Length: 390
Ligand SMILES: Cc1ncc(COP(=O)(O)O)c(C=O)c1O
Image (cartoon, rainbow, N blue to C red):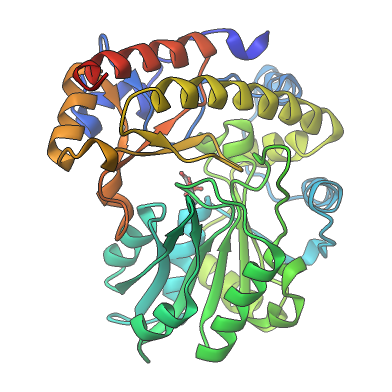
């Protein structure tokens, strides 16, 4: 099976494997890279083919986000998510982080607040701080092993300086897929407090059977004047190195302001990222994604069974994403001890829970997007590193 193939990423100048030691302290020779969220799979054959043709053609002049790319994205959203997008809403950015920074730059000032529910993708806080805005963390409640949003707490946490809420749907790191009611409640909270709502939906296409992602604009169309939905083919097709993403901005005035800012910062799209995205968002791409999700479901089952066999360790059942969120609190160990065992004994590079904000302590995030034999290796390493608990 194609996902079983180890394509060997060491020595390919990729962050995940070639900067393993720098970011996680794990010895690169024997280490397993299960941290940053890209996959170890070669992308879909249709994408490789279009890129091969471009390379063989040999001219890499300026490009633009042409009509075929917009048509592909609108087809994708309608076909996969039941979302009817006007192609004019799509503004191409250099990825989601760039779009978030552009929102900050367009509508907020130094010292303004940005809020998000935690634990969450650590870059929300880091990008806020880099922009000299203030992060407001709203802790989610863990109820019967599932995160829930608490709007009473949210109302108490924020103040009048908060201008933006960044929402992660599906959620990284817990893999939670929000219901339409939950999405609507988030939008209504933003309306009540006059917040710009950034809905980060980059994991929308990596959803397991039994759950269904509803785009924010489908769940809460009446609040679209304040909503900016972010997405990209990057996680789904392992293309984040192309630095290409999309901001869907239905409100024309808001969209014009965002586009103006991008022009001021002299951003225009890279042609290979456009070609890759346009080709990925196709029936052939969709078929490949289904096969990948199926494979990831198998990885998830092997990983969960293996780590859940360690007393006191619990991997949260994922509804989406290839990012396992593992709770070590039942071991009674300190965060330092958990980190030390994963880093020095298992020699696995992961993202440790506290970086995801309030509620992340005693958790670690493991990236499962790798060939199955490496998942089995990871499980064996973990069982050995925590063998004294058996
Ligand atoms: C929720 C979420 N948003 C955004 C990103 C990064 O997107 P980009 O590389 O386009 O900035 C990630 C990557 O892990 C992510 O998990």
